[in-house]
Structures are given as structure tokens and as C-alpha cells.
Length: 153
Image (tube, rainbow, N blue to C red; front, top):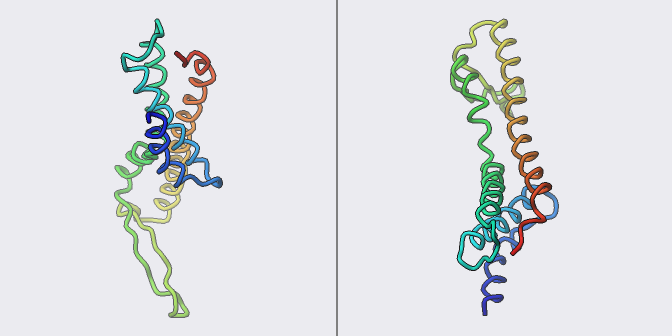
């Protein structure tokens, strides 16, 4: 009966799985780490250093949570938004009158020199965002590479 419940618990994850996006791999990994974390936190384990194993698994699971939440932009854009203000999206009709052109403006951009600097700051923020996400991905797989073979009972 336990195996049937286990199989049923995986059905929503497998049902939504797609082979064309790496994020689904992280979703599956997140579920597996959550299950392992629950096991190593329980009284069912016989491992002498289960607390150490639990800490490693929990940290790996937290990293998958952060990767899936994908909120790296919050930290990356804080300085940019403080300097230039919050992005204002708008649209203007195109010359043909059939379509419109999306506009993206920042309240503190007043001159062309400001616009050029905002674009440079924008690129820097994007690089920080990507680096932060990549650091978490690298850390996740480093933890697994270094410890996964000890994650058993």
C-alpha cells in the first residue's frame, strides 16, 4: 500500500513533466530531495550521521526551491530601480496605425546620456541576475557531486 501511495504522490509531477525544459528536471529533483529530507528527518533512518546527511539534503532542496522561485531579479534590480525609478510600460501607435510599439521608460531618465547610462546599468543588473542564478545551480550540483553517494540508509 505504501508503494501505491508513493506512486500516486509522484503522478502530478510526472504528469506535468516536459522533456524540452531543464526546469522540469529541477522540479523532479526538488520533489525527490523533499521526500529524502522527510525520510532523514524521521525516526525511520538508521544512519549514524543522519543529521549531517539531512543538512546536506535540506540545503540542496532549498537551492532547488530558490532556482524554481526564480526571484533573482529582486536583488539584481534594487540598485537599478533606486537610481532610475520603477519601469513604466506603455505603448504608442505605430506609423501604419495598425499596430503599436511598446515603450519602456524610467522616470529618472531625462536625457540621452541618462538613457545610455540606464542601458549600461540594465546590462549590469542582468549579468548579476544570471550570475546569482548560476551560483545556486553550481552549488546545488557541487553538493550533490560531493555528497550524494552518502545519502542512503
